[in-house]
Image 1 (cartoon, one colour):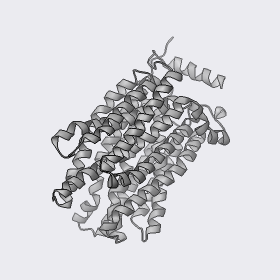
Image 2 (cartoon, one colour):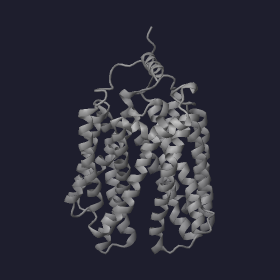
Image 3 (cartoon, helix red, strand yellow):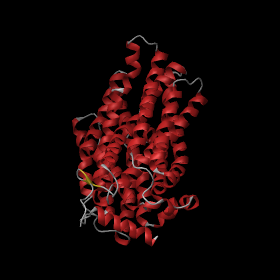
Image 4 (spheres, helix red, strand yellow):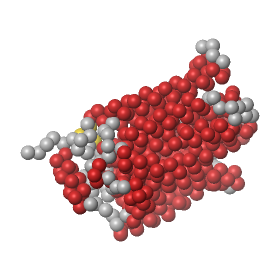
Length: 451
């Protein structure tokens, strides 16, 4: 007798994953990325009100803080992944949200720059944990045949969460000031609200997510084995390719969020616009690209679920390279003529993200999945460091399009590597064979016996 397939809408789930688990994952997708963006919205208030940093120095200090945050993440991504493979994803996810809460609660009580770096380090550990666990749980819960669709769905929730935080939580300091609070008290209140939301999310995740790991306790790898697994698994050409994709996809996101706004703002300011108006004009570029990316996510999710995963990477990275190299043909980013190329830029960026995340989710083995995804995130953090360090220099010395062209060129090299991988080690030609909960359970059991 065949059991009813385990599904959540159009998404096929692994055995044992309940509707409640999926609803909790959806809530995590909506809140995780949004909540971690509040630090960027709140840092200017902290620098101005509590530390008295001049406006002309805040940009550089904010950049240093972000680079420091990525270095901390670079150091902890892999250890947190190893820990998740030993004690469970839920436990690390919950603890990481509590670390974020602690970082936010302390952030507005800063009295010196070194203290600010210390609080940012606490926050960075939390960020590394929540982002790593979100991607790992998406891989744990979904079957191969609809994993791209789930990645796309969670990506849409990420974007909606970011928009919600920007619209609602981003205005909290002003909200409290308008109700009679001082600037200092308003900052404390705003950061406490965000910290409280992080604590509530930790409790909800603890109650709603599936505990443990995808393999039985007796079959879990030891700590030394997990330490080696992140790099050892790169012997699989598709995992090595996914690491390279992570490097590109994460740097893509920073380029779009940082240098598209800066490009538009610079052009607007050169036309004599006031600073506030110039910034608003610059943000229009990012808004157009982000809207296009949001609408495109489900399209690319469906596409990569219907082709070989490496073929999907070739498609996604081709779109990304077209978007980034297309910036060479933009003379005026604020003109209507530039809109099609800006839309292509957004489509390319989100395609790179979806393709990379789906490939690593597919290839990471269950017994060391969090460790392997942790290493994937390490490469992503390295990509961010490169794009922030070198991209700014290229922007100033060559031109606004230069950071985008740099990543576009790297993406072309990645496409060549993906073509070689497709020929030499393509993996399964399709993940869309009919699958039931029973057959999945038998397959997983057979895999564990062979291991």
